[in-house]
Every structure is written in C-alpha cells, then in structure tokens.
Image 1 (cartoon, rainbow, N blue to C red):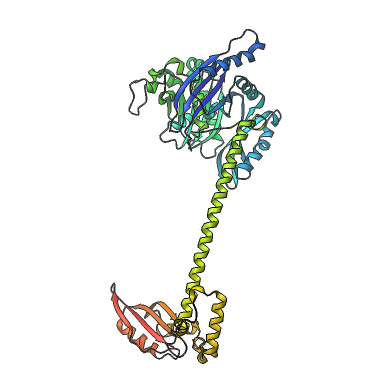
Image 2: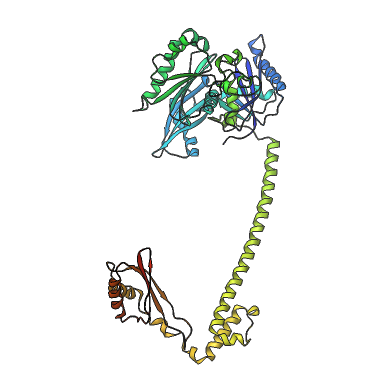
Amino acid sequence: MKLSAKVAGIEFDGDTIRLAVVKTGGRLPGVLERHSVAASYDDPEERHEALVAAARELRSQVKSNPSAHVLCAASAYSVVRQLTVPFKGRSRVAAAVPFELEPYLAFPIDDLVVDFSVVEEKDGQTEVVAVGMRAENLADELGVLTEAGFDIDGITIDVAALTGLWHSTQKDPAGLRAVAHVRENGTILAIVDGGALVFFRHLGSSTAHVHEDPAAAGREVQNTVRAYLSRRKGQEDALSGVTITGVDLTEEEREQFGRGFRAPVDYEQVITRLRGPGMPASNGVAEDAEGVPGEAAVPAELRYNTWEAVIGAGHCAAGGGFNYEFRRGPLAKADSVRATALRGAFSAVLAVFVIIGYGMFMYIDHRNTLAELDRVDRAMWEVVRNAFPNAVTEGTVDPDNTNWRELYDFMETQISEDPTLAGGPPTEMFNMPPLLDILSEISAAMPGDKVHVTNVRIRPPSGVRGGGTGPSIEIEGEVDDPNTFNEAFAALRTSDLFRIEEEPRRQVQGGRQTFTITARR
C-alpha cells in the first residue's frame, strides 16, 4: 500500500550529500525539493567535520517538513547472495538468512546488517535475495546526519530505490526484465521478475566508460545477465527485454551497446516521468504519444541517475516499490522520550476505547438475554394455554407474574386433577411405526422407475388426549405416466402401516404431473 506522506531521501556521493523531498501516495512521487551540498576540507582528518557542516547546510535549505527521512546507501559496498531457506514464513526466514549467508562471507557475519527480499515460495521453501551492508560504513553516514540534526527513520539501498522508481513507471511490468542503471561512478544491474527484485550486481562501467567503449559496457551487462540466466534451468531465453536508464547515447553508441543481446534493448530517462520544480515533465516540453518529454529536454545536472536514487528512496519507503531496511540490529533507532510518551498516550486512549466498547457489548448482551428470556417465557405460556385452556381462561394463574417454579407447580396440579391426564402422555405417539419401515413401504409401492418421490413428511398427532387426529404421513412426488401413478397409488392403499382416506391432490407443472398423498396411522 502506498502511504501519502512527505518523505526525504538522503544520499552520500563521495563528499557530496544530496537530499530530495517527495510527496508520495500516487503511482509516481511528486518532487517537492532538491538540494545538494559538497563538503570542503584540506586535510583528510577534517572530512567528518566537513561532512557534518555540509549536512547542516543541507538541512537549513529544506523548506518543507518531511514526516520521515531515509538514508539511501550505495550497493557498491553490499554483499548479495541468492539463497534458498528450507521453510516458509517471514519471521522464520528472517532468523535463518544470516546463518545461510555466513558461509559465503570472508569476514564475520556480525560485521553486516542483513535484510532480504522474497523471490518465490515453493514446496515449503523460500527463495530470497539476501543483502548484507557493512554496519561500520552505515554507522559513519548515520553519525554525520545525526550530528547535523537529522532524525533518520530508515536505511535503504540505491538499487532498490532506482529499480522501484523505474518499476512504477511501467504500464505492464510482467515478465523477466534486466535494468541497467548507469550512474556517474558505475552501473547497477537489476533483474526484475514481475513484482520481485530477483538479482542485482554493481558493475564497473561509469558514464565515461559507457561513452568511450559502449560495446565493452554492453558486453559486461550481457555477460552478467547470461550468468544469472544460466542458473535458471530451462529459462535461458526467458528475458523479455533490457532497459538502460540514466544515459543519453547516440544511435551509433546504442547500436554498439545493444549488439549481441537476444532481447530487445530500450533506453529510458526515468527523471522525465516526474513532476515538480525543475523537473522536465513540469517544464512544458513537447511530449511523445505516452506523455513523456523527449530526451533532449533532460538538463545535464539531471542525467546519469543523479537524483533518481534519493527520489526513489522516499517513494519506496512509503510503499511505492522495492525496499530493503537496514535500520536494524546495531543500527536500530533508539526510542526517544517523545516516542515513548506518544506510545503511552496512544495505549491509554486505546485502553479507554476498549473499556467503553466492552461495557457497550455487555449492556447489549444483557438486553439480548432479557429479550430471549421473555421470548421463552411467552412460548412456554403458549404451550400452557393450549394444554389447559380452561384453567388459564378462568384466571387461576397470571402469566405476567408467574415464575417458572410456579408454572411447574400449576402444570403438576392440573395433570393430577384431570383423570384423562393422570395416566401419562398419550400412547398414540408410541404406536407410530419406525421411519425405515414407512420408507420401505413407500418405496415398495412406488418404485423409482415408475414414480419419483421428492418428499416425505411425518407429522405428529394434533390436539390432546380425547380429541384431535393421529399422526399423518405426507408423500410428494412427480410422475410422467398417469396410468403408472394409478397402479402405484393402488398398491400404496393396501399397506398395513397406514391408511389413505383421501384422494391424492394432483396437478400439472412444467409438463410433469405432481401429486400429494396424505396417509394416517
């Protein structure tokens, strides 16, 4: 789900710190602000203080009030492995990933902060892309920003930010696609399968190298993709396309770069899809049939994926695409007094609502119980009125002011005083033949190849001892041939289990003749 919020993405690029504030909630983020400040120092030992000063200057330039700040870390310093964990469930997989990743490392797992994304769950196993980041490097960048007054809520990685932002621009992102994000100091290759980031690697081709030798840069991307596909048995030709983002190439450079690719290669400037101050999509540039400004409209400062990473970091943090979270473990955000107070206040308000809700539930339940008791009481008195109409009519009892014990005593007195009831319940109710015998008698007289019986009802005796009628059996069914029915009905009348005194009720419905027969014991 994409949350609507103002989120700031921050990225360190050497001695330069970039920040972009975006408005999330839509398919693509709206860019509200962009700022960039470079640290200036003469002695390498002064670098930390210079970066803190640059971060403070950056913070002073922000006019809006972001609700969250996200640090975008460089994937060039990450460890990436595709792992298969032998069970399912995110919490169990999260606990197992560090142990599964450790054998592939040349240094202690404790030096890394680890997160993962799920590729596929199948046959009780989970395939993941596990990513480890050096905790020391992230702690250094966090320290600079914290000293400058920033409150960093999360840490993501540039490949997730770049690919997530690109993925949000696609109308039909289905299928297996490779995306090469060309940046000034290197290329990040990601492979996306539908809605999952299934592979990525940092390559050495900078923008200068791509322009100088596009064929070599293309081969580097091609060989990496081929190596990945070789591990997907039977899917070596499954790639549906290759996209190159961030770089403007001439027709000749594109021809050299794309030479040898089996899948089609296209080129995109994701920045042209975004709106906001200084964005190409907001400058009134002539657009193509899909509403995308031409590549020539992209200023030099916006090329080479300079800003897409920090913009994508804010977009993905609000649920707009792929995301990793490395603000965990030793880098987990410490609880502040304000956050604790806010949680305490929220818990108190929640407790009040729970108490009020429980009280309302108990009140409604009590009312429902009283209503049910009243209904049962009225039903009992209806039975009493039917059984002893004279006694109730004479006013010997008051239904509205008699409890169940008085009702029991009243019924016991009436039974003892009435000679017809002194012997117990009517014996007719025990003279009814067993149900299976009745059904057997009906099926013998009305076999399925002649008559289709659809329903059999056995009704209890009506009235009380000394009057009324005995139990009755009601048989319903359908028949095609009237002569067949007459034979079956005649056979039924010879039964010793019941007697038929009335003619059957017959009518024609939908071309078929239906009947109802009433028999009595």
